[in-house]
Image (cartoon, protein in one colour):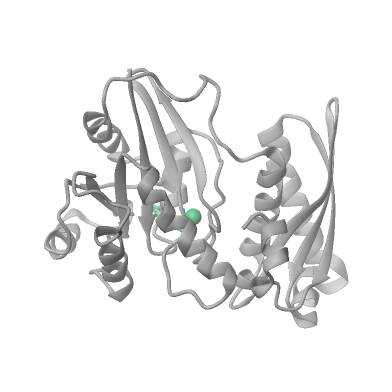
Length: 295
Ligand SMILES: Nc1nc2c(ncn2[C@@H]2O[C@H](COP(=O)(O)OP(=O)(O)OP(=O)(O)O)[C@@H](O)[C@H]2O)c(=O)[nH]1
Ligand SMILES: [Mg+2]
């Protein structure tokens, strides 16, 4: 069988996590329309008759201000030395911007990258544009890197994702897969629970708030067909706490219900979810809290 690891890098919000979920055929990474959704490296394993494709989902590369963001960028770039293949993802609706150029430069000049490491360009979200509009975008990207392949695709609809799989396997050697048959991710249920709660907060809030939110699992108890989870939603300011809670607790209730339904679907058991909102001033720069949150 074929086996290899592909790291997916790119600007925030281009669709990296969506692609990982599509390939793995399971939701292992949360997705949102807000940038900087993914905060750490997540391993996903896609099993196919021809072999195993290990995927490294990474936080979107951006200019880091807080300690959290510095860690995110480092986590993303650190995947370069683990990978047999790099995939740089961009939004196919737009001509290359400053962020995309910076990402391409970072990837090709990474000291961890050997000359022989193939780099694919994934031009994503082509379900949203007509074909003639993609061609100039591809052309503009062509000269920006020494691409081994350029693949227009839709991570969301799965359009051309098979082609990516085939081209990736073509680069991998014949060897035993590194993972067991049922293994799809290195994320624990506990981590996924925290992430799903954060996803629902992202869905329901806007502007600066998503960046200021973290979720800590205080208790995670699996008892037969029931899982009882207590989690704290951390924000940085009192005003943000009020927003997350909403009028008469309405928003927090909605966040809890949506997260519980997702968790029940993922875990296949009944979930009891108890959510609290806490204010932790400047947690994004607090080294101890960042470690505790798994960032
Ligand atoms: N129409 C369309 N939307 C997409 C596609 N891929 C991703 N999206 C949407 O784009 C947004 C960002 O997707 P994510 O998968 O969270 O992007 P990401 O690159 O992982 O973002 P970060 O984790 O912030 O770096 C979400 O609203 C997705 O639903 C696609 O192929 N087509
Ligand atoms: Mg992501």
